[in-house]
Length: 84
Image 1 (cartoon, rainbow, N blue to C red):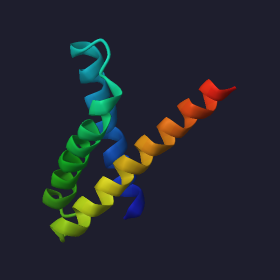
Image 2: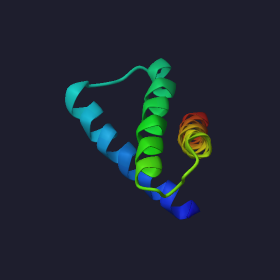
Image 3: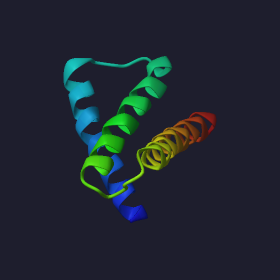
């Protein structure tokens, strides 16, 4: 079940990322947490309505942690790349 969350979050992130790149040339970094929150909400709705997770709050927390964690890892990679 845990892998399912990751796959759903990854697919929603990919689709929203494509949409963001097509609509806006560059999204400022201050809006990335908002984008991650939107991804978490969409992923939560998918997980809840497809009965992957029957508890809405638990689905939201898991999806939110996955998106914020992925955002943190991406920021860490950029920081490490810029410091070299």
